[in-house]
Image (cartoon, rainbow, N blue to C red; front, top):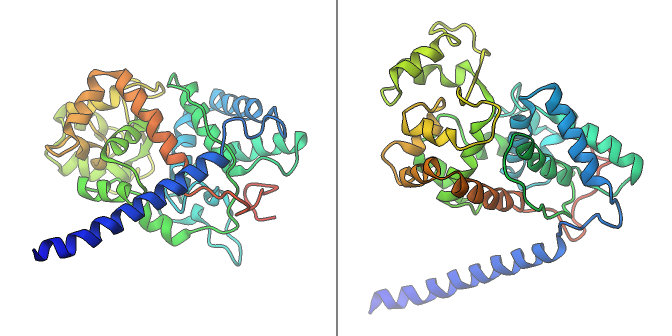
Length: 325
């Protein structure tokens, strides 16, 4: 009987929280729309797409960089373009936090799109929306799926340096840590595995995978030997870059998951998704079915892009993305 006395209030409280979250999500959906700028700035999406495609044509790495920049923005206090703010005497920028410092890229691409949009419709389109659309366009440019992006976000007037240091997953994170970090953002295990598939693109620095290729046993020996050529065991070449996927480094595909099943994940956090844990079956599914991966990746990206957006008069529309008006 005692268990029923304590269970009933818990159920009621949980239901109340669920209804509150559902209500907030519904309000967000009602105020955001793919057609948000159709009347106020009809060329906005075309300008963003053109800017992104031009940037990637100059630097193929930029596709991965823009997706990563979007993720690092949304995972810290929501998709509010706070990552784009430069440090000032009163703002400690997320750009300078350990997970972003000297590694996050693409700021200039977002700023370039913003400049062009401001010429057509000043003070209308947020940097947060530009970054979100740019991430989608970057995926498409690499051969990945497209999706409709809900628009209407506004920009933060502050940055969250400390939260960037604690909230963003580490390349050394174990599976439980990753699952917990994503769950705090309302993202499931399936979302975790799908979003991690963005590592089918991009490169990473030697110091982030050196320990893995020289010390871990859950790595294919031939794969490790190949990667050692770009990453000496001695503390030199820390910033040497190596593609996360050696096979198709500039193509958005499901090869990332095939690599994990062969113990060819470059980052330890990636390999931990297929290491005898609860996400093994999801990795196997995506390795077999690119369609399943694409479908779930789109779903997860939409969920990611709608974490705590500033709407309903909150936030501002920045004139430039790197500074508060």
